[in-house]
Amino acid sequence: EDAAEESNVSAELIAQRKRLVDEWNAWRIRCRDELPAAIKKKLGKAKKEEEEKEEIE
Amino acid sequence: MRPILLQGHERSLTQIKFNAEGDLLFSSSKDSVINVWFSHNGERLGTYEGHNGAVWSIDVDTQSRFLVSGSADNTLRLWSVQSGKCLYTWEFTTAVKRVAFSEDDEQIVCVTEQRMGYQGAIRVFRINRDGDGTDQSEEPESFFNPIGSKAVVCAFAQTPNLIVTGHESGKIALFDAKTGEEVLNNERAHMDVVTDLQLSVDRSYFITSSKDKTARIHDTRTLMVIKTFSTETPLNSAAIAFLKPYVLLGGGQDAMSVTTTSLRQGKFETRFWHKIFEEEVGRVKGHFGPVNTAKPYGDLEIED
Image (tube, rainbow over all chains, first blue to last red; front, side):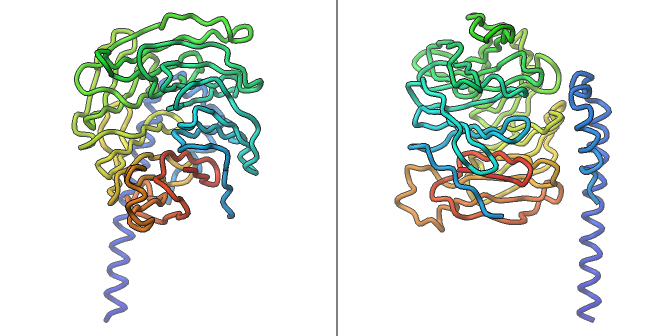
């Protein structure tokens, strides 16, 4: 019973964290789309690498 | 990983900055000297001498060519990173509390202190990058006095000529550098003085720390609070980790009261918080005074 409760709690925690990560990633994508052209250009290659790594699961 | 201790300043540090490649670390101190260190081994590469008072703030351009510094001696100085020579000095009536380069390295923004009948001011200088760097214009490209609570920290926002500021009252604001107009503000960003402001790599968001014991992430365009990190000690610095989902918070009570409290009560740790979950994930001890400034790079290096 304890184990079941514990896994319930952790399932909730995982769901909560997933929601937070999804919210963050959605906001980051919005930010990137609206980034001024000058900064987009400057970040260039570096940004591509970062984009892939910054999407956290 | 074994931490690297950089010893060489005689008084407390005020700010640290990595260059774009991360191989050099610059540190400013109340001892009026700026040092540059190799970040991989902590060996001192050189010093920038000339200021006659505490150096409050430094920044280095993306090419590691120019260094800018602001000091209690009422001057803003431009240095050659490589030779250590002071290339140009701008003089004001009050101390320079904060300096920062624009993302294109073409401009410098600085905040001067409000004192003795002088209003606090924000100035933007255009940097002449031709030649050896000594031929600079004495006059700022723009100059304005923010009304209301005085500005203490500043940086260039995402859009050209937009300055983001943190204020004594806890306010954060966006100013049009050309007109001096306050474009947007968040009066209640913090409940006490803003102590640090550091932007993300793409400048789309920034983190602020405050004496109100919190650090917050804000959207640069809207100034909306995205995340809040609540601690139990006044904070002096907040930094965003590079490529990792963490923020670093540094604090502790004022140096003046250090001798009267134990290290444990002083809470002189650097705290690592998860940027997205707003949860503390770890602390680094080993500081003997308040953590004044933090700046991560790669493997999350920190200094006090």
